[in-house]
Image (cartoon, rainbow, N blue to C red; front, side, top):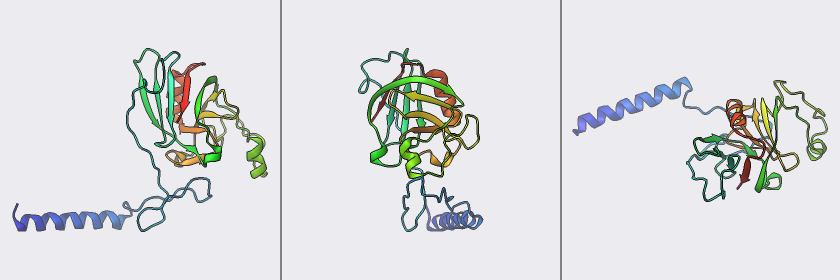
Length: 201
């Protein structure tokens, strides 16, 4: 490649980058400023970002079988994997995960209840930390933190649920639950059964 061609390419790259920056498209959007999600700084700036690592997984290292289907939540990569019992369906979804280690629970559980438009009630410890929070937010309410569907787990207060606040996905932002985009929980809700195996790692 000639030197003139390289110079023209570099000039085009510079002008294209400058044009995008001038329109504001290169600037990342700021997410919540209420302190309810983690803060991760980019090189040279303090910007809130979603962090999620997507790679497909095989179910065999995590489950003995796929009876009733299986859900694997990888808290580090912030991803939820679903396998159907007959192995015909595999899904991978981005998630929100608990804010801190003391709110995090790992291990095996299962889906014990499926609820459409679930009402939300703060746990006693959440209410203690935030006494101004309401005692209940009705199901279907646009500010309901559980979104449009919830899979209740055998652990008290733990759910896999939707969220209307899409900024939370890909972040440490929950009080223990695993959050999905509403369109993803609708799909997972349709596939999961009472008794679906769940493993959080």
